[in-house]
Picture: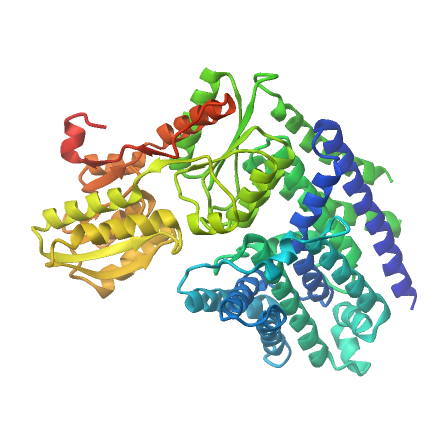
Length: 318
Length: 317
């Protein structure tokens, strides 16, 4: 019991640090660029971050169980092309979206089965799925994008409710649900328990295999939601979409304070992590900084965030 | 919190040098943005160079940006969105995806920012459906270049032989046009057979791998047309590592400096020259004209030509 309190205290402290980081970053860009701190640009950043942010929720769950999911970008592409072909076949939008979700959930579930029943390390299982889903997307489309959808579907990208882009609202809803699940439900408690000490979780009667399947399934489902948002945004589903999104999602999760060792982390931290990456890319673009330097900065921020972790942990043990 | 401060210090030190990057060279003058597919391809570096020269002559500010990865059209879209927020005066765009950039072009239109389409054509059908428009298209005729390459290979093989094609990323207008041109070029020669046509994603190392596989599966291949020089150079390396030098005709596209060198040394037989620097220069010049209220042509074609050992000997490049 004591350990649990410590962990959550650390999480709070860490989350506070991440928020301060985001605020400082915003202040920094606001000073340097007159175009940064405007309502339209902040909504622009939120919209740009929405896709990675949504995928990162699944990644956070997986990483809290001390796992990893390298397949999220490929699953996004595969779910995207099935969704797009369903739309082109004339299916109603909700049904087409369900088909995309089913693809994503199916891929995630397969990851879960390979990891729980097949006893494969998550790195290997999802590395395989990364290649399989990408290949499936390319094969299914013959390598070509599927483009051009009706306004009803594109509303997900172009629409606004009370001046807030629909994608941003979806992102916020996903985070509220995920925060609730992680902090208030059995699934959430078990997610931490599996990552904290899997043996102990098994011994205390948790059906670890079942919950791993659910968690990887959720990660696949959220990749499919990312696919819905991306496809609506670009009015096109590309089989090569989402390449290396897994790295952005891992980066957002880690910057947000979730430990790759498992058992620790919050989705709110991840949201801030995703926003930090989004703000960095946006701000550096506004300043006209080259993409090469942007990569250096983002890499430095990831390392900086982990340094912060170790520093805070040291502080606490003193 | 001393270590926390230390980390903040590190981050600040890392980011501070960037503050110098955004100074306008010509304050009060128009700002034009050039968004290319990638900046780690010499073709786009040449385009950047041409654009920068023109910008300096006309005394306008130029911002050059590209996504980290050539295939990442979503990030390119984000860059264009950010440039709209930054209220640049005009955007020169080489789309990473001909269809996927259409919605963001519509956004630029709504913000009153003209978009000039360079090098790779935007999908006109989707553009019309979205009621979006581009100010002009500036580029070379990729179809014509492909056709020239097709005729050249057919002639070199005296109208009879087995040919392989290395394609770009499927669905890219540029590669598709080159390939269509090539197929039409060889169509007058019924003895020319395309034994295989595979994608190498515009990449040199994939060009190597894919062509090495082709050499195994189709040992009788006599010529290869690669839709870009990087893939052609990969094929050249595969040919060398299989000791097949001299037996296979290699024709690329882009007149990449290394490819021109390879043509000179007889490792490649030809490449198709576009003038990326000219495309960049014309892009900036026409953006400037547009901003001064002049009308510009709907389409500006940049010359394309075949580079061979002979044409190089004549100093024709």
